[in-house]
Length: 151
Image (cartoon, rainbow, N blue to C red; front, side, top):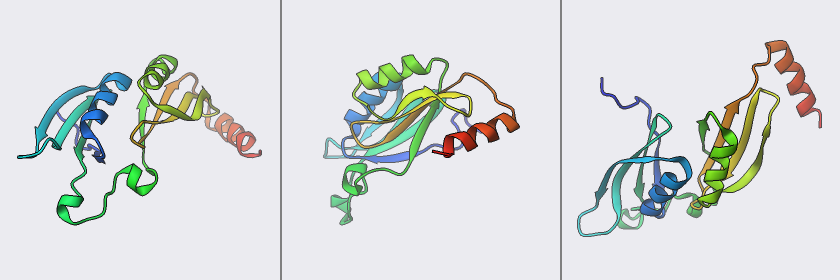
């Protein structure tokens, strides 16, 4: 068993180098590896350590493989959300926004006990940030959910 997590998301990017730079600025990511495809300036594989997890990524090679691009820009969005549970959601949120992320759902206190918000990075990937601020009981959570979904 290695020191790496057993589950590591792997994303295809329109600009992997810029995505790496964004993740470093926005989330304090540490670059673990970067391998360039021979004869190109495209990243065929990279990995980043982010908040105790690992994110693998590469540039889009769809054109070289005769396939359609599957980057968020090409698909018109991304249904996946990468969640970061942090000690200080406000500071993490501000850092991500300063790095170029845009709010989808504002950071605020939520009924389930987290301070939570949802962002979109400059490349179309979605990131949520959460900080546990309370631990409601199951009954409190059920009542709060009913109230929140009653709108």
